[in-house]
Length: 79
Image 1: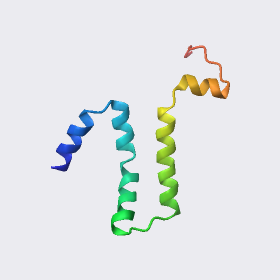
Image 2: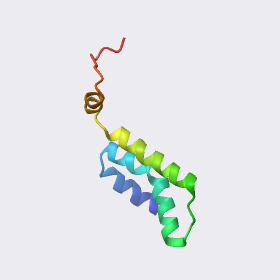
Image 3: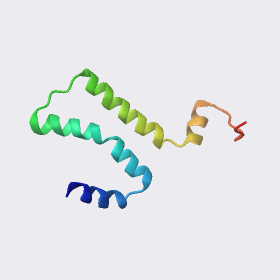
């Protein structure tokens, strides 16, 4: 039952939105476990959650904008 609902909901999202949602699923599971059943989260859990969030931010940033902000010149040639 749950997977059917999840599949239908993910079908309504763009592929990038769905990938971010699925990538953060472990983070949401940990947060809900902490909130609902009092699961204790440690430093390694916080570091792992931060890595997930930072990774999602990096994949969402436009490469052209990032190159501009960092002052990287790019001619488009991959050779």
